[in-house]
Structure formats: C-alpha cells, structure tokens
Image (cartoon, rainbow, N blue to C red; front, side, top):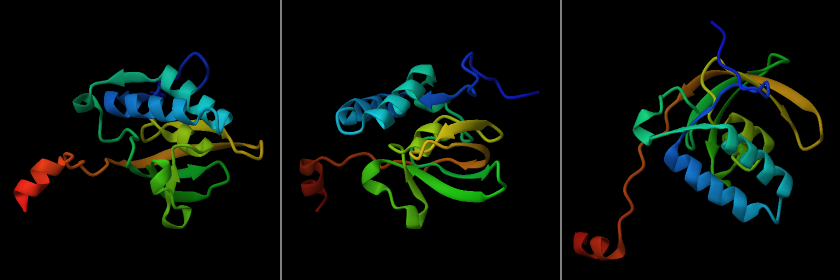
Length: 149
C-alpha cells in the first residue's frame, strides 16, 4: 500500500503538538528576516496532522531525529534535524529553517517528497530510516539547581 498523500500531492505528515507549537513560533519570528523559508515551514505546519506528543511514532521525523534519506540521484545521507542554533552541516545537523529541513519535518520512513533548494532547483528524497530523538531532560529552574548543589 502506498503512503498517504495530501490533496496537494505532498505526502501526509504528522507532528507532535510540542514541535508544532515551537516551530510555529519560530517561523513567525523569522518571517521578517527570511520570509521564503518561514513561509515554507508555515505551509508544512498548516498541512500537518497534529497529535499529542505521546501519540507520535518513533519512525516520524521530529526535531532532534536522526534520519537517513536517499536522493533521486541515488546519494544517501544521514542527518539530524535541529533548531537553527544547533545547525552544523559538517556534523550532519540540518536546520529546520532550510528548505530541506522544512521538507523533512513530519515525514516517516518510506515517504518521498519534492523540495526546492535555495538555488531554485527541485530535488526529490525518500526517507529510509528514522531514529527517534533522545528524550529531553526537564528544564531545571535556577532555585531547583541551587537546592541540588
């Protein structure tokens, strides 16, 4: 059975509620500096099926997920999807605020998507493997930190 697609010809995507909220704020905050990437991310967020965090599968690309994809030219890459401050292409950390980063969010293993690079060329990739992100530690408030010392 073929993976679901949306009425726009793009594959159906699923996002955890926490990622959706945080990414929406990020896209809105950068819309003045880089409107094209912000618009791409907002379009993906608008078409996503949003679920509670505990209902998202491990095979769905989230923030912090490590994944392997193959391009239509046959090139394979392993990357991690990260927030802009963590991006480092030399370490395979791709920012969500890049065309490929916005295209990856919410996809599952086996899904393919076309995306347009900043140079205007259209590319296709197929997700081969997704590793769930590492659990996030709760934020320690300064008073809690002082008590722990």
